Amino acid sequence: MLLNRILVADDEESMRWVLSKALRKKGFAVDLARDGEEALRLIQSAPYDLAILDIKMPGLSGLELLDQVRELKNDLLVVIMTAEASMKNAVEAMKRGAYDYITKPFDLDVIDAIIEKVSRAREITSQMSVLKEELKDRYHLEKNIIGNSPAMREIYKTIGKVAPSDITVLVQGESGTGKELIARAIHFNSKRIGKPFIALNCAAIPKELLESELFGFEKGAFTGATERKLGKFEQANGGTIFLDEIGDMPLDLQAKILRVLQEKEVTRTGGSQNISVDVRIVAATNQDLEELARKKQFREDLFYRLNVVPLHLVPLRERKEDIPLLVEYFLKKTCAELEVAGRTCSAEAMALLTASGWPGNVRELENTIKRAVILSSDSLLTPADFPGLRVQRGGEPAATDELSLEALVDMKLRVSLTNLDKMETGDIYNLVLRQIERPLVRFVLEKTRGNQVKAADILGINRNTLRKKIQELGIELRKSD
Image 1 (cartoon, rainbow, N blue to C red):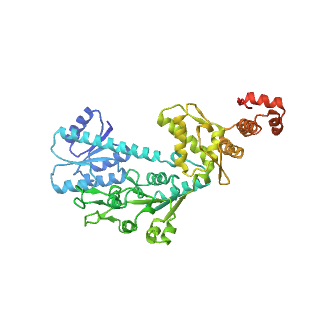
Image 2 (image 1 turned 45 degrees about the vertical axis):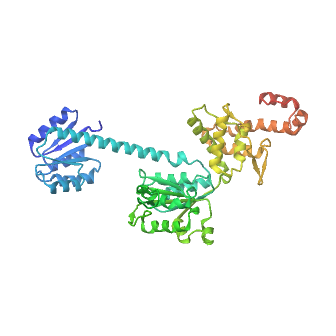
Image 3 (image 1 turned 180 degrees about the vertical axis):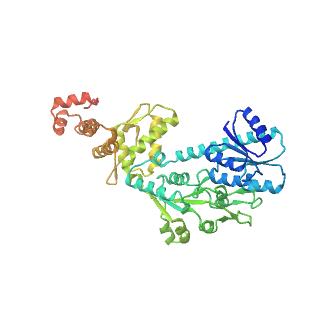
């Protein structure tokens, strides 16, 4: 039960006595007030879950007290009692924000029903509050949008600035960069949290169906329209609509989207009524809308209405310092989803992932990690678990067995510098050295075809030291070596 403390205010002593006895018998803490002024002092000094107020009391009336309660403690539920069963009193009480209205005399069963109703209402309110916090936490920037690169820090700043307002945002970026995730972060960090977030991919729906998806249709509007259907704009009323790949939207529909932005109303297909909608629009595209507008392939006026706040997501290849963080995040996420033991990446595998070009961006990286976790039976993922992945060198891919030593050192430095607060003083040299020693020795041995004399000479160590390193680092020599 979510009700604990109740205030009863009535100038009739008998009514106060009856209600206090009945409520205390049910386990509630009950405070009593003889008039409106006393009730107001109690409300100001103590927390109550419910107030039962008589409409007519000396001095401050129940309705006047209700007005002050709404200003002081808007979450306090108030039930108004009156001996005059007039429509005027009932309407006035509810208009001023009363939760319910009861007429004297009444049976105690009525109070029981009120208590049960109020308890349910407070439970729903509590659940909604928790849900809002969960949704907000789910799309909290620090937990769900991964990256600490300068480019991502600018994205975080922009989201923080635009989320509280209703300003239109245009998210631009290559496929797989996380445009919908950014749109959701804007919504769930805005005042519209708790309201609908509706996403629609304009490129995934045939042209002839897109209009009815957006604006809905009336019964009988076309063959097969056997009942009325609400469009995405009506479904998103009060919340946010995310129009993905808006550059693929036909020109005639672009004109109707412009009307929604200007007039804040829609008309269903086959209908004549203009329906008001309160919707925030976040659009996204992987195309250059400004260039399309110059070529008359996208409405210029719509482009300027959408491009109020442009938000550009850089491709993953331009923020490679974020890849180790993303890999760690996707490993944890995938292992949790598949309910398998945790996986980690070897230094060589991480360097390979960091050095890749990722034309599919973050989405491709996530799918690659998921595939490796599913197919590998080892807890440590190596380059062998990422077949076909290529390192980018000057625009040309290199084979996976020719792992870039520069990429490996660069990756380890980025990871280490990101976690300096977790390291002991002076530990970075030994940490990086340990991580690159094994691939370095193995790399040189492979290039010398296993000739340990040549390898030792290239490495600048004697042959006995090299043999010791091979044993310590667990490097397996091939038969040909």
